[in-house]
Image (cartoon, rainbow, N blue to C red):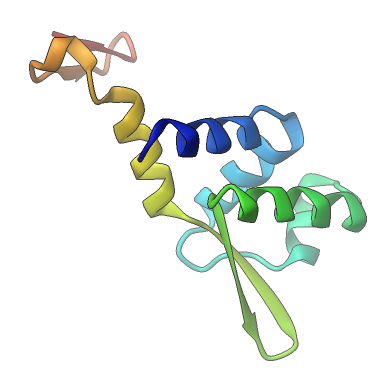
Length: 108
């Protein structure tokens, strides 16, 4: 991932509703969710949800697939992994590091 792609992804997630939607889609992977299910789960009006899903798709963080009469939205886990890899690429000055699960952060 390049810097511009990371900025696009981070900008999309820098909004409360989109972050909640994305986290919900990640939790529903790989099955995905319909807009009506997302709307009910997150108590987000359909028109607002549609706008935020469009922004997540534009940023490459979500994908949509038609299944008959339904649209199924899924988190793009490859894009999420690429963003995490970009953010941690130079962690610990290039040395391997292991996450310290007790403190929820990496130790070198």
